[in-house]
Length: 140
Image 1 (tube, rainbow, N blue to C red):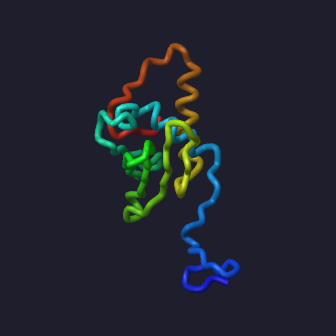
Image 2: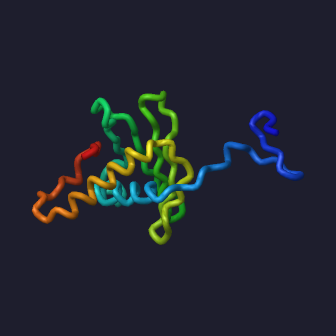
Image 3: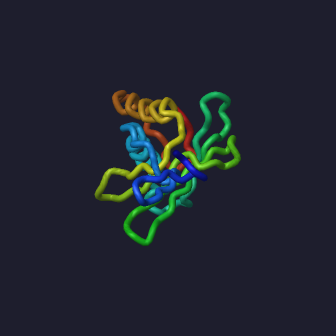
């Protein structure tokens, strides 16, 4: 039984908001996609912000901010512009480990389309090189 957003488990109480669904394989691929497309942001040479365009109407739907933590990790936070800046993405990125996806409320189809578009371009050897320094990046 949930009481005021708290789940009683045995003799201890755990806040329901501390539970996350397990990440699917597409979220780490999305992070690798962003790192490959925007190396200047992830290396700290450019401001740590970027946006994603909505495939439906071409407007920017998601804003992301990369924060460098006191440890060697980075935190990638995403909000939905169309839903009053509601958090939709939270991941901890470490150079030696798989990303720790703590929150993802973005459509899996959107993330998959980003990853698939880059993989399709990589398979075409005659494709022109992409500009990676422009902000914000857009769906291909």
